[in-house]
Image (cartoon, rainbow, N blue to C red; front, side, top):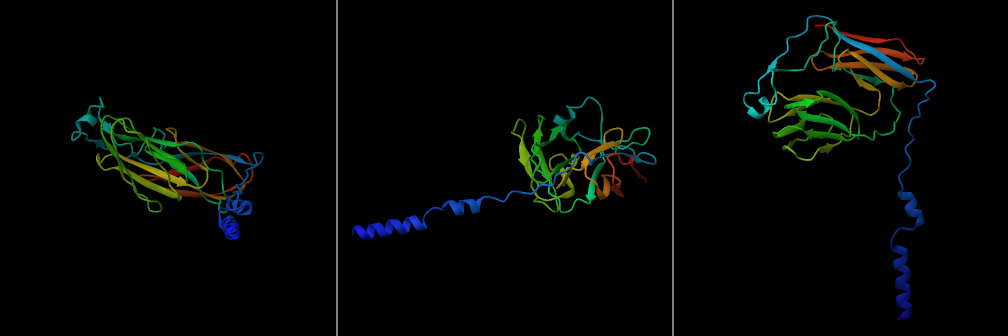
Length: 251
């Protein structure tokens, strides 16, 4: 009897939890991140403009939602096209479209925030990395409904009441661009770009952009705008101070 119990204990030990070797095999292999040499990396700067008469801004009617209308003392206009007097174009998304294939970059640690304020999405255009936390915040006294409509990622649609906790989601796959809408307020629109690398920028009011730490190489650099589509330039980075990159949209 004692012999039978001893044999059973040996068998349980042999078939039980994983031993040291199997634990090692379960450890994920370390990711070989691409290392950028600061001594050879470039600072890419540029300017995006629109050549032509600026489209007339459309006035947003919030009459159907009194709480939204009460948040504004003056009329609200759609910020689809924001042009300076010299034609400088804001909210243009500039990114490295090709040339980084096969390179894996360290993940982004901080969250990117989109706020619902004044019954509008702020900012209207934003970008983040694959796997990076996308935080949605409701700063209004009314309910909103955040509804990204991707093609490569999972579609989701969630209501956010006043004072509700921030929503946090992630996008697993690259995509330019993901339209976002509010199903409650049909004038609310935004766009989210998702990239597997950190080489992108969104133009400010002066139409200018900067992309830092870009390693030497042959690239396609593209600019996307909600109203005007996409333009691109072929560019070879061979020095730390490449020439100013300019994009000019036309009607």
